[in-house]
Image (cartoon, rainbow, N blue to C red):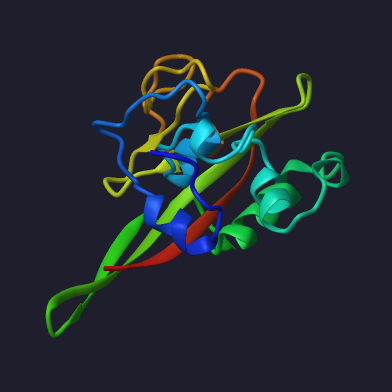
Length: 183
């Protein structure tokens, strides 16, 4: 796979919301996993999985203009640039998909999934979890994380992001994301 043109349609085609058989790539992080992008950084752009970089590249805005913005604002700018619809959500909602059928079978699929955002004010870092279709919360533990996990630092399965222990990372908000993928 070569360099991918960063536009909304190309990115939507690449989004895959799987946990099993998820290929660990050293240049992806929790944000890439939350977005469903199992794509090596080298195929997109350097530092693409840092908040605000999608927006910066796709809108030709120097990243230094965004770097001092809060993480949440940069997340929302990225989602807008990627054409991913979003709304604030309760972590109790479900991640789902629905199929639209045309004359020749499946015409499009609508994906709705939840992501929860965490921040670490001491190290000025972020972390994301994603709720799967089966109701479990998963996350990739940074760039070095080898497999997505549904457990927190204490080994407990994450049932609610507001109540899990992710060390110095503190829960901020949950968003419901949605895209429509056409066949």
